[in-house]
Image (cartoon, rainbow, N blue to C red; front, top):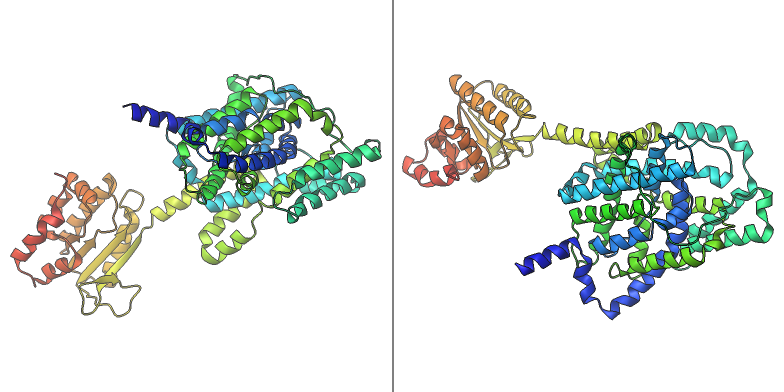
Amino acid sequence: MQNTFASGIKRFLPILDWLPNYKKTDLQGDLSAGLTVGIMLIPQGMAYAMLAGLEPIHGLYAVTVPLLLYAIFGTSRQLAVGPVAMVSLLTAAGIASLDASSPEQYLLYALTLAFLVGLIQFGMGALRLGFVVNFLSHPVINGFTSAAAIIIGLSQVKHLLRINLPNSEHVQEMLIALWNNVGDIHWITFGIGILGIIIIKFGKKFHKNFPSALVAVIIGIALVAGFNLTEQGVKIVGDVPSGLPSPSSPSFDMGTWLTLLPIALTISLVGFAESFAVAKTIQAKHKNYKLDSNQELIALGIANFGAAFFRGYPVTGGFSRTAVNNESGAKTTMASIISALLIVLTLLFFTGLFYHLPSAILAAVVLVAVSGLIDFKEPIHLWKKDKADFSMLIATFLITLTLGIETGIIAGMLLSLLVVIYRASRPHMAQLGRVPGTNIFRNLARFSDLESRKDLLMVRIDGPIYFANVEYIKNKLDKWIEEKEDKVKMIVFNMESVTNIDSTGAHELNEWILSWRKSGIDVCMSSIKGPVRDVLNRWEILTCIGADHIFIDDNLALSAFDQSIDQSELEKYSPYATQTNK
């Protein structure tokens, strides 16, 4: 009893699994990773907050309490939680519809959104609904991510060029506005931004742990302060409040909740999909701990609660930071705790250093980060391998680009479901023939030398028989009977690949048997799985078809049809073919 209780506590508080056994040898890796990711988080957090439409300081707030909470409740030991580009853009898109009248009200909506995301993710984890994210198929995520990356990139062009562009998530509107305002480029701002992109993009070539984003920030600040570029029109961050985040509270207005709910659902699913995908990739390299998708939902939910009550905004696990965290030697979530402590020190003592930080440098941080999200190889790969998945990827990509991020992800999920339903409604079916000189049966469509007969139709259905596919199955069977010039005397159903039969499938199967026998075609079954036999027994189909028409394999069915086997021999194998759970 005590062991069960302790196990339950550890499952809910994974930190108790590794902290009591923490080794001094782990500290070196965790310290190195924690400092590296913490340095990386400072410019990223500020840049992503700006992308979300918030003051840069809220990006730093979002990587203090949420990061500490995930370290306590998360099952991944390398995942780096905080603001990410995708969620930041989704936050801006969701709040835009509320027309905030002031920065304070905008922040209130961001806190409320973080609270709703936390509520949804925590609820999904508590209800063991981690599997729901599987409805976001890889092509959908790929198409959505690539389109969102383009939208995110375009949203930062106004800071890179210092021109007026609308706050839109529709690429056509942004491109038209860019074309109309291209003559107003502020060239000094543009030059600083390009310099930042070059430093961030190529800085890693010196060393994988080179803090290129921080170096770009330092150089940008030095240029603006040294040459007094604010007087030349370069836009800067300005005053950054110092001190730790004070407690905050989201709105509990139901009207606001209802407006934000669709985007909260989107962030919950997309954020978890991104977070769990990278966590699985990294965990596969370590294998000294296990990931729990439902506990990950709970941990991310609690982290978002932390963001809501400490002046942050929605957070999730990030690809680039997690990769850096792992490469820098992180062994446990102690690395995340160290990163959070570094941010705390920055908030307490160093925010004044960011006064002259150019907005163009923060835009450069975002642009470099999202450039890696645009995947050109996957569409080409799918075009060659799977046209249906390619079509789904392109459709999601185009819908997201033209109709918006929220519409894109919902459309992608619906497309995924439609493809699943379509494929499930058209199960693979095969006519079987005997391999010459053996008792083995294979698909006639794949082999040209199999033995086949006009008076016998031997069929294998690869999938469940249920309401969505019974018409397709029956049409296929009728077509095959017709192709045999109506000479069929026996249909043998090989049931080895049938996994389930629902009430509609059972009803139709019963009708088919009665109809075929009425027209002079007998029916038998072979290789029925135990659970399927139980279903057939409940619906009295075993009685309808007859125990003497149920066989352990195709060869016995064929021997019985040809009457080339004694009844005593058939009865010897009958219990193995007909036994149910009763």
